[in-house]
Image (cartoon, rainbow, N blue to C red; front, side, top):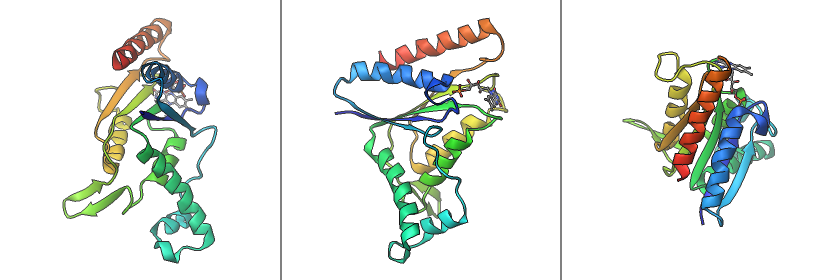
Length: 200
Ligand SMILES: Cc1cc2nc3c(=O)[nH]c(=O)nc-3n(C[C@H](O)[C@H](O)[C@H](O)COP(=O)(O)O)c2cc1C
């Protein structure tokens, strides 16, 4: 049985353009995997707190040294990491906000990056500790950045997921969504066609 973890990060929750593209992919995936299991985590509907010094100290504390508050903090992070381990495939809705990722997604990043658990430091640099698996990202943007030096979002997301061990990344972009009706229609048509190819 296949297992898919779906992450939404749009502030518009499941109605965001990125969420809609992700949903379209997941509907097709569902048709191709009738027995498959899907878990949805909507980071705007169910937000995580910002990482702060207290939370980070809980991550660093040894299992035997954590007080009850620290245990609860680590349990929350562990549950997020367990979802990543559980899935055979991960789907992420990825809007661009102010040239970067939504702060809700960044908060999730900050809860799943755990030295010694999801990555470790080696003399050759950091090494991911999660099993590599396909990650499909549905990136929606008002402007156009792919292939330019200004697309720091794509590089950041690649670097972050690579830190954990995920290298099989597939980005589907819908760009120019705020650049006029015909541009938007063309961009969405291209994204829909790519989604069809992905699950064909
Ligand atoms: C707060 C905010 C910031 C945005 N910043 C950018 C930006 O820096 N570059 C860009 O191309 N589009 C920007 N946009 C447009 C979004 O990327 C675009 O509307 C995208 O489809 C949003 O995805 P969503 O509907 O899934 O949230 C911004 C939109 C919002 C709401």
